Amino acid sequence: MSEAVPSNLTATALASAIRRREVSAVEVVRRSLAAIDRSQSRTNAFTMIDVEGALNQATDADRRLACGRISGPLHGVPIAVKDNYLTHNLPTTAASRVLGDRPLLGEATVVSRLRQAGAIIIGKTNMHEWAYGATNEVSAYGPTRNPWNLEHITGGSSGGSGAAVAADMVTIALGSDTGGSIRIPAAACGISGIKPTYGTLSPDGLLPLSWSFDCAGPMARTAQDLAVALQIMAGVKRPERIVRTFSGVRLGVIAGRGFECATDVAARVNDAIEAIVRDGALRSSVTIVDAGHGFSMWKAIMFAEASAYHKTYLTEAPEGYAPGVRSQLEAGRCIAAIDYIAAQQFRTVFVQQVKALLESVDILVMPTLPVTAPRAGANCVTIAGRETSTQDAMTCMPWLANFTGLPAVSIPCGPGSSNLPVGMTLIGRAGSDFTLLDMAERFQALTSWHDLRPEMQ
Amino acid sequence: MWSLQRLDAQRKDAELPPLDEALAEEVVTLLSDLEEAFKRLPAVALADPTKELCDE
Image 1 (cartoon, chains in turn yellow, brown):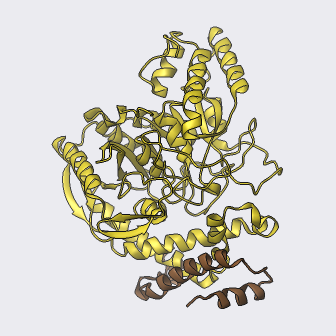
Image 2 (cartoon, one colour):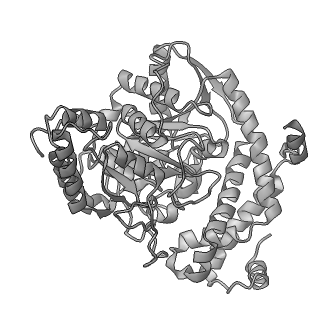
Image 3 (cartoon, helix red, strand yellow):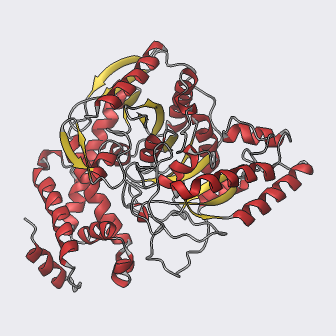
């Protein structure tokens, strides 16, 4: 590592050091490439790494800076992009064999905005095939592994992005989130991630899974970096901070059926809530009515929409899909139109109920996952004495924000009993994305869990 | 209730090729779970789209 590269590896710190010319963009990119070189063979976080392109972009960034031209808040900062975003200089595969040699042209709007703000795309990150799974065990490039314990999964579907940030390969990575795919690996890998309010970020150039749930979003170590990325991706200026402490903030802690979790997870999240309460928040317990039905209807809608998008590929290249992904797509073909409509109708009522709940509290709080990252290859996990599939265990809490379209941020809140990270989710009202990040930033000013780093074996 | 026979018949109707047995069994499990979920869905919770149009 270059001596000049700040040890406080956040995008904000790197960008500031580059602007002050304490370090060059080339040095920062070389540091990032060296970290990838050390960790890629163990984590399999990337599907492709653009060494030459990244160094060329960095050289150009340094040249422009020497002329006094700063592209934007991320001038010279390397970032990684999940392999389901179109990028004009790198192929997009969705970690699947299905696309084969069919090139997907263009560039996602949010990627283009990050580039214009000075970010350097250093590579594409590994993912669960077509984002259709929450473990990252199924990918044409092989599974990703958790930097905190290489025998455990990263969670998915943005697991490569989670591992890349956790192992300090990059400071910001893009994920996408249909049922928790940003927040699941963020929690499992001990970093932060936000699923914005549905519609906040353009989905243009992001390969769909289920269009009425899909959201683009950033993953980073800190909430501050998430806010920097989000404002660039949304093409807006971050509003003046409204929340500087939790004083008077009404927390609705979600409890009850469908939200049970392991004791070590419950303990860490409770400690985190107590830290927020000590800062002035008011705590109450809330329940989500019909959560079980909601979880099932979220699946039904996703199955139907995913199969509609994949109809042509599924007909022309069915063998290209991994079996676990194909079975879901084949099942989605059999969902009747009236059932899909019934699910959407149920959703309308459900959303009204949750929005009404958010009139009586300011934010909803829950663990991001009911367990820490499961062991690789485990098909089932036990939660509060009940056995469930690993896929359901990963999504049984995060689906709520996708089904309602509400913004949700996952932030680390300490290690569980096996020293694997635990994440806590804050859900806010529609459109309150930056307020939610203010709160996450405040939590990270009160605690230092986000600074913990894995010591890879 | 979904079964391999029902799946096979539905795919024939849709002019889709049969699935190998392991894959078909997985699909039947997924569809059976969803069918159960739809059966349990409370009818009172369903929004009336006509009402929504009137409200607008």
